[in-house]
Amino acid sequence: MKHLVFLTGAGMSAESGISTFRDSGGLWENYDVMKVASIDGWYENPDLMLDFYNKRRAQLKDVSPNEGHKIIAELEKDFNITIVTQNVDNLHERAGSTEVIHLHGELTKVCNERKTKVYDIGTNPILPGEKAEDGSRLRPFIVWFGEAVPLIEIAAETVMQADILVIVGTSLQVYPAAGLMHYLKKGNPAFLIDPNEVDAPAHVKVLKETASKGMAKLREILLKEYV
Image (tube, rainbow, N blue to C red; front, side, top):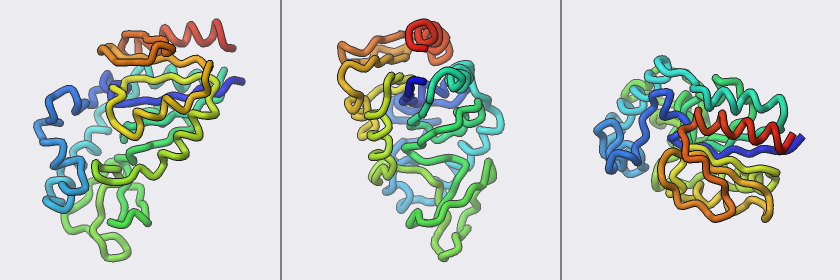
């Protein structure tokens, strides 16, 4: 059974109703991205950050995995699948995928300020002033701009082990995640699914489609040529 590794980004969840912030000129749901997605923003205005992520967390109750998520999960019947995602939502898991590496954290979890203790809170809010066991402020378990990406080495090793790489819904502009595709062994097939123009290397086969339509087409290719 071939090892199929997915790199997924914001476009993977866009059809489910989760907005992407790179399509709106540096604004995300009318917020300045650096004020709600950077470590400096946290120290500058933690209550704004808590409110923003509480709203994102509550939104998860109103959205569902799209067909693209579901197709990836279904492919576990025929492939050994690992997903490396830049997304902080839980839609891959809710669709049935069993091995998901969240590079940028998880919306349904919170942590102490040193990130040494993690709590699963589902879609519940963090209250202003709410403390972790060590007395520090509870914060979203998110990797913000200005912070290290602790799982990047594991993600790179995962891509190195891939027989096939599939990139879905990412602009390949956010580093270090954008560099992961270069860890694929030379000669192994790579696919990219995105409705927008993406500057992909020549060896990558591009399907200019949304996640759902692209995954439906890719499923046919994978089952025909690689099973």
